Image 1 (cartoon, one colour):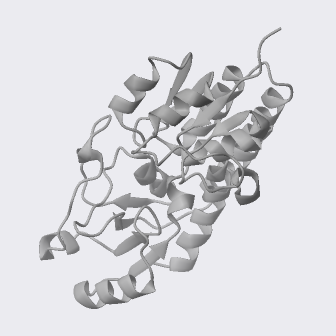
Image 2 (image 1 turned 180 degrees about the vertical axis):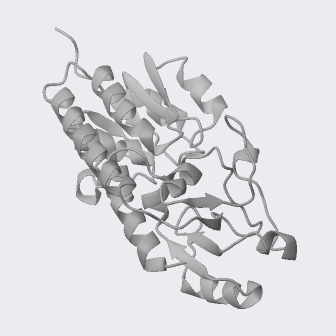
Length: 259
């Protein structure tokens, strides 16, 4: 008989997905950023952050699986984990449409747990319905600068999940640059120059990873003379099960913004 999996998730959105797939009892550790669903994760031990993983603590927990992500986690940590973890699952969704594949990959990895495959297919059906509902709507094309960090100001390249999420509502990120598979170029620094602002219809300040608030939006809007909107970063950047709600959120956000 196959032993029950012991899972460490180092990816906040996938921690939530695993719980929605019915794998809560098999999660033996998470990061401090794995905060959803709050009630379910409260008693799961933390093993540091996504980029400062406590490898010694993970080793003591003797996991059968550790789940990591290309953007979220550091390669040296992943390589160290491979030395003592039987299965290190590397994820890298690059577009919203990759979510059903992700659901099924997790179901395949934990196929021995009853009900996981059925839960994955239910999530796929919900995602497909939400995507179809969004794509049935029409949105005017807009150019947006999506800001994720301050000091220095940082944005997203076109070949990121976030940029491709925004493209579903016909919002195209500025500048028009590609960052490759990984690395700093995926999240380039920017300056609010006149040349850049001439390309932009609005600036979006994400609620994560930097905690932008109304005071930041008001100050920046006065500085640049362009609309500055706060946007829920979890809804635009979290793949997994949260992406289903994210599609509905983004459609409503784009309609209400009326840019």
